[in-house]
Amino acid sequence: MTKESPVLSLRGMNKQFGEGCAQCAEKSGNLEKNYCPACGTVYACRDISFDLYKGEIIGIVGESGSGKSTLMKSLYFDSEVTDGEYLLADYKGGQENVFGSSLQQQKWIRNMLLGMVYQNPLLGLRMEFSSIANIAEKMIAANHRNVEAMFSRGHELLDKVNIPTFRSSEAPKNFSGGMQQRVQIAKALSNNPPVLLLDEVTTGLDLSVQADVLDLIKTIQRELQISMIVVSHDLAVIRMLSDRTIVMYNGEIIEEGLTDQVLEDPQHAYTQQLVYSLL
Image (cartoon, rainbow, N blue to C red):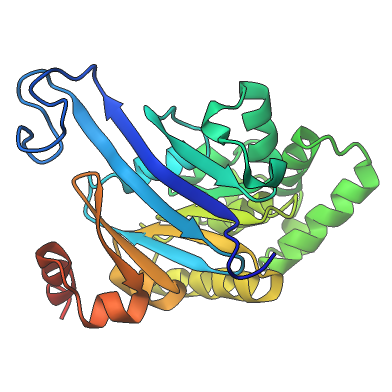
């Protein structure tokens, strides 16, 4: 895979809640932010397009309601899109729109080509299962059947995310928030996906724990050359992790570029407000 060939391409993705009407059909001029007062339709994502390259981290930042989490849910097939094109280089040579694939194909893509780390560990982990069983579950979904190999892989990954071996048989419900996120990361990496999605993974964690999780993410990216999309409302997280940054507002991309460029010299008024509010 060359640098010029994206591992993930998104083109014209739209996600709306509601049927829409004549007044909001053009999605411009008649909306209050991303909401149509006439019919109540919410345009959560509007014409979202970007490319993700091998070994790159893209940061997506924006206020609550900007469409960040809706975008991530759509990429992981947790939510259906209204329309758009989604291409993955490792699926049929990047020639088939996976938004139009069957549910069975999308399940295969989730298990083999994507890893997801949710803000709320309850969405990504079975809290009653042991940590190593959580990893095995993801591997079984990808048709792994060798128990010994799964246990070996589980221990390897838990060690990578700094979970002690003697706690591998312990349930995540007994872990701290930071440890739960690390188990989620291990589970997401179990099948060596080319793309890792991280949605607000440090929200609610103590600052020292945040630093540990961020350092772990950066180390994994550097060692495995995995491509990542990181969503956060925290510009410090985006600055530390991402190579490029996308700014979303009212469901749209309003600014994008190299992270240093976007944060040091923001062009859009909203981005300027976002950056300067932290100074």
